[in-house]
Length: 416
Ligand code: PMP
Image (tube, rainbow, N blue to C red; front, side, top):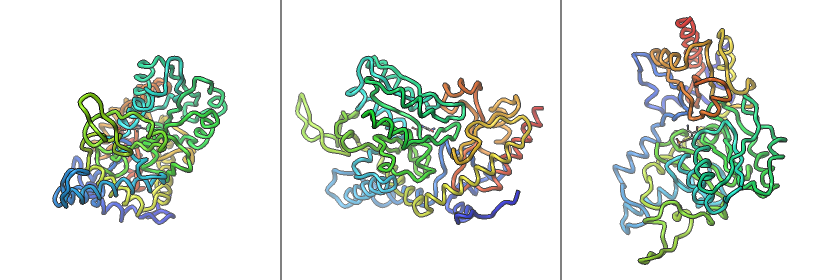
């Protein structure tokens, strides 16, 4: 196969790679081949610099101080919120609530919206491919409120049966909570159709967008999603910062999860009242540096251009699926057609345990993930204890995919 040096869309990985200091590192005296992007992405210098600049030149708490540093920190924190809002095309910046990540964002909805709106006998629709973060909070809510979880039929490649899904709605359906892109199969779910069907029954939809927003252009208004949750660290930003996007009317009606500073209007000895969005749902000093870093990450992604990023990853995914499928005895999970999926590629080689494959790849400087990927019900459905998962991002190259395929073939031969 001919290996292009840059993609048709014009994204030049060599140029991009120069922006990521860690990609010049050696691991076990080999050049680092980083293919664990679904777990967390690497950070460009622009993000690292934004964190340094905050701590070195205007570190202060926000929304409180009447001094110059605090005013600047507040302005940069709120500018980051606006950047994220425009990145996902939210109608208002205050529809972006900063959280620690996807997990916290989903728990915020399960508590703040769920406890108010879900009662005994009500139903929540999920899929069997959810990450534990979009499963356990609903199990906890169901236990608190006596509600039921129901699972939307899907095939082993993560394709949702939309007709069966449409038939699941009844008077007790309260919420649909599904992934926008599977962190194991790579499957991109038909989010707009899922939302349209739910809205025809006046049921809101939460999309777990932890894997989609870093890799696809996402427009929350076009999707008409009610809630979306995602993590900064998977989209070039720092850890400890993420987002709950919510439709204004829903966020406005939500009970805060964290009572404390910044979220109040008036506090008396026995009662208090809350302030408006977004502060009402961000009690306590937030991750100021993290939010500023996420703002820088979003700027970086916008400068690269999400459509070219998606094209580049699509091309690499096609290439990787092609090379890997040539390896004798490999079982590739997820849709074989790259148009239905993103660059998350899970596989099992012969009867070699995924941890052994991961360890051998690591010895070659190749970072992948091996395990259940926080999706134990999906592993059970697929009939495997674990998979090896290689996941791509904008800085990955065809040569790195070659290294992966060669490494997997070597691992297979080693354990034969
Ligand atoms: N959902 C999906 C689909 C994910 O891939 C992840 C991260 N692996 C999460 C939720 C949880 O994200 P975080 O740990 O950043 O809260």
